[in-house]
Figure 1 (cartoon, one colour):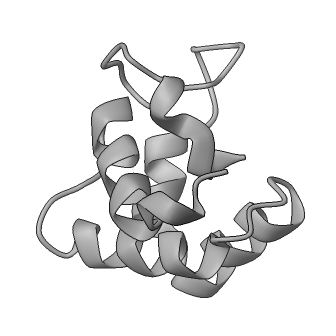
Figure 2 (cartoon, helix red, strand yellow; figure 1 turned 135 degrees about the horizontal axis):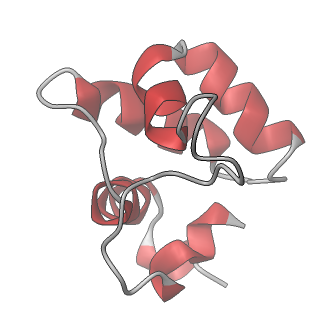
Length: 87
């Protein structure tokens, strides 16, 4: 689950493509999709119980600056999930 993403310790671009020559990076999707679509993807494919909070905070974060790396995403997720809820 994304709420357990704090295991990501290396700061790197949000790019999970196998073929780097085409397609969009994860950061592109996070910066372009609607809050509703991000929430649906997190809930359906990631089975993330905090999908609504995370999606809301992704949209809030990108109002000020684009999401470009793993640290951006980790910070958003950490702010979205209460410490006591991380189990």
